[in-house]
Image 1 (cartoon, rainbow, N blue to C red):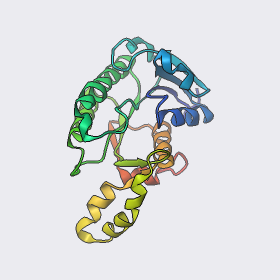
Image 2: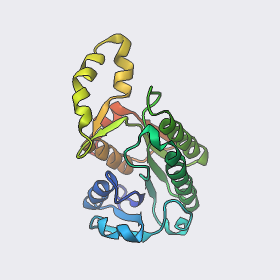
Image 3: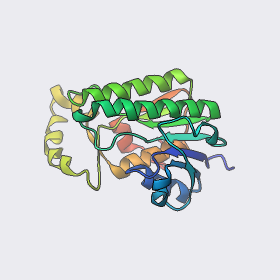
Length: 222
């Protein structure tokens, strides 16, 4: 396999980001295997091999090999404070199984989408994502952890109304750091950053914040 072409195992490959990322990976020549439930098989983009299994159990642990890259995108959709229990029963449980599977398969690089923090909102969501980050770091896996705050895209456009406020806060010294850390990224930006993470694996743990996500792409060299 050429140096920059990878064998990728992905969870959440039929979701909002995952389905688009799978298509991008396949187009660039990567081998993609996606963990899916039988009912979601028809949602998997062409170019990916389905692997039937449940992200909330360990039944797929032996099916990750021979992948060298593991992308974990499983999580509760449309997070809100009302879903605190789901964050622990879905996001945290799925991440534990993903890390265990990646370690067992001896993958060389683990990619995870976390969330920007600290922040004044979504305390339960952030706590679970921080716990997930700790699990990844303690696993010994080489990992890229992306920390967006909110991803703008189809069906996720209401924060566009906040852009003038962000523009102003980024120019006021007292609010600049928070505005940049909790800034908005677009769907193409985070997909490009995820693709770049796959094609430029790291050693140990690498964090990409909002600014890195905005300015990192497969061809940027950054």
